[in-house]
Amino acid sequence: MTSSSVVTLGETMALMRTTEIGSLRHVGDLRLGIGGAESNVAIGLARLGVSVSWLGRVGDGPMGERVLREIRGEGVATHGIVDPDAPTGLMVKERPSASSTAVIYYRAASAGSRLVASDLPAGWIEDASLLHITGITPLLSASAKDAVHAAVDRARAAGTTVSFDVNYRSALAGAEVAGPVLRELAERADIVFGGVDELGILYPGTSTGGAASLLHAAGCATVVVKLGPGGAAVHVGEEVVTAPGFVIDAVDTVGAGDAFVAGYLSALLDGLDLEAVLRRANACGAMACLVPGDWEAAPTRRELERFLTGDADPVRR
Image (cartoon, rainbow, N blue to C red; front, top):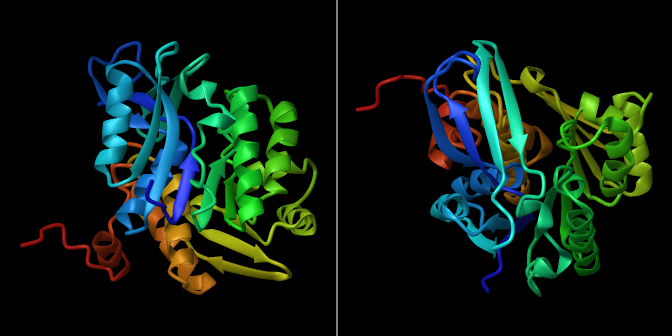
């Protein structure tokens, strides 16, 4: 097994999305693809030149085969466990209006929810520089939660950096149930990503700065606050570094947070200073909004450079 700079684990599902604006009650066509927060990050990192590995469970069928083929085809080292006793999860995306997107999940008892700690290969985490996890996986099932904590245990023992994106999904659990689960993982991470509302779920009634202070007190070194079109802020100790977002005409915002995380982690691994790290993260997040899909618009280094230098000529010869 070849080691990777970044390893991540979680559920990737088959994805069906409408190709036109309107409710699923009336639209005629759907396009098939894949999507999952952790594999979105992995693909984003791979396109930026980072050696990355993803692990997850899929069903024994064409949907599972497609998930593994797509992720592998993007240059991600793929550890897919094929589960013959459960289906690959499915999510369906519709655009009820030009300015809104709705996502419906069919993932109860899916193969991805059956992740267990013994699925994690020996040395896989220990040989990596960074482990990236999200708050989605531990809410899928008790065994998936145990697997995530086992991964964090191994990372901390090996000195592997732990990155955690809160990525709260209300469809999986209410805030009162999810909050303690997500907070426990956040307090065990070295880097925490979250929006203002998500940090509020970790520490109800606390300001963003207060939540960052509580995470620092628990041992988390860096808290990254995603502000959407407003950019982002990084809390490191008493220091707060901010960076503005990019003005774009968004087509599809789903997956933007994952692209942001990929941009941030790649820049961090490149040794850039915090302002440059945030600039790349914000750019990747903005670029992900320019094309429909969860990960399809995640940029390569060349595409990122063109975006950052303002080369917006729509025709390249």
